[in-house]
Image 1 (cartoon, rainbow, N blue to C red):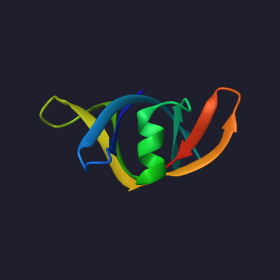
Image 2: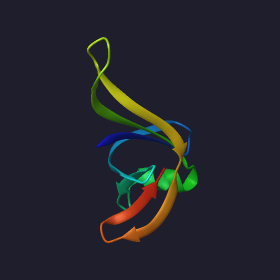
Image 3: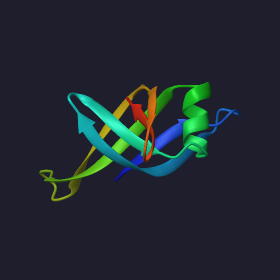
Image 4: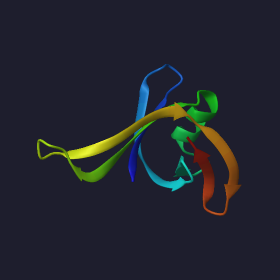
Length: 85
């Protein structure tokens, strides 16, 4: 699971939780066709994702992994659409 940020039509952030995985060096995000995050990525592909890791930083806190990028929509699969970032 990760936190995904897309942009609403008015430019405000839409923050949601998404299923994520890795395919090669790309982050894969699972979503269903009617989700706002997918509509937002179709309109404006700029996204940010934060994945909480189990790595402990020097201060004792858990270290998140954050990335910004451009989403691209892949063909639908049986479980919904696939989005790569």
